[in-house]
Length: 160
Ligand code: NI
Image 1: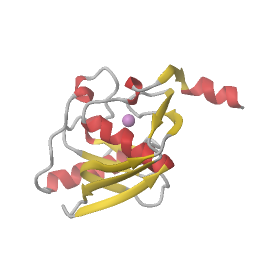
Image 2: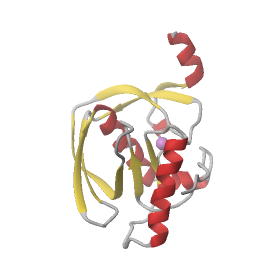
Image 3: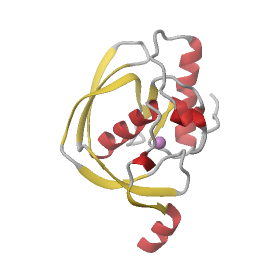
């Protein structure tokens, strides 16, 4: 168990396309455990491997705080609908912005045992899946923001 350093916008590793995972190794298992620890420590709902500097197609997502999804080599195989909402990213600290995403996605991936799985998500889970998968191709949500990128703290204060 270890907390890894979260890479931030401006670092080149966040702009690279990640490589497919071809086998599960002790080192990759350790990476996944560390990604979970790092995500929970940072109070995030998702984390992609390039955010800790590793160019592998692995993401972890937990939108409920109950049971994390671990997706290896994930791909969206179906999507529908539309949702407009605020998004944020651990690699873009203190910021938030509006992004339109599908309201439903079905993702196909491998689990930690390299078995094929499919997961359906709506609303926040669908948004998190889209956001994390974008990281694997070197994209940050700030490229998709509609309107200004806002200061997340200032926004909270405005709402109170
Ligand atoms: Ni992110």
